[in-house]
Length: 412
Image (cartoon, rainbow, N blue to C red; front, top):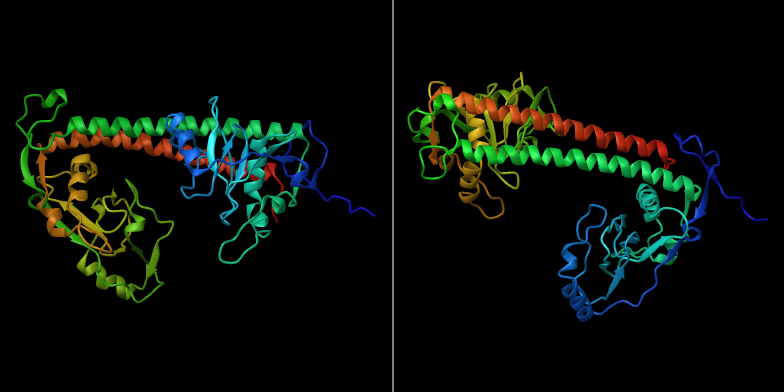
């Protein structure tokens, strides 16, 4: 007797669809795209003829998928699916190619398409079940999932009409998310451009743009950062011995652009915290600046109402209140001119860093306190708008993730 296909039903469905999803081999709903692959030389000719097409093609938001070795290349039509068979990264890609051109892709990416349903739906389904699909890979040092095995994998698949409906729903959410993402980028670009105008250029003592009430104010004074800061310090230079306790222990990974990320914070004992805190007593509204490693330059104002310890990868800047407003100090450190100074003064081999001495020696331009506060208030309002937009974007992405969990059966 033939084995009956298993039936699976997602938690959330559009009301017009009542039939159960059936577990079927992928090969029953897709067809492999067969084409003689090009050689490396032919690939170079194709790329050149299309004006550098390789740089134009983007697959499912994952960037360019290319192989530069002599393995041959397929030409992938628009709206087709690919899978990187040579590794077990478990990612499927849908070629959202709206232009009337084709993409060039390594033969390590088999190409196939739906015979009746939606490629966009299948890409989402395959990625959702990618871990289970990866168990069918073969090989030891180099895991491979041949297209022949992939097409035998059994997956829960609805009728073609329901596939297209789900794909359209998720596509509309993607468009919304993309639009909100563009808004966020516009806000960030606007702030960056405005900051350039509100701060003097290198070697100048007046900004290009000033608030009208400061139009006749004196020129900005050139000072060193160390001369206008009450404290420039950093955290402990030794890793704590304790791995748990009541006190948060922050490192460079916790300092983001404009905010403190406590999602991955570590904790240490009260005793070790007291020892570290005595050397580096962080106060509320201090500016925290990452000075080591890949995140160097990230800075944020300390808005936390509790004590915490720091590793030496984070510097603490506290301005002299009579000379420097803390919000202005944050905007100054985050500005393009100071960030350029930071990048240019990094040194080290395995780990690049800036020293506290170099940080204190940076030449900066300062207006009077009143103008500092006006500039900081303006730029901080843009930061607040960008933060609100970022939260909205995060909520939309979380909503899409939750919706997908409802619209598809659980891989478990």
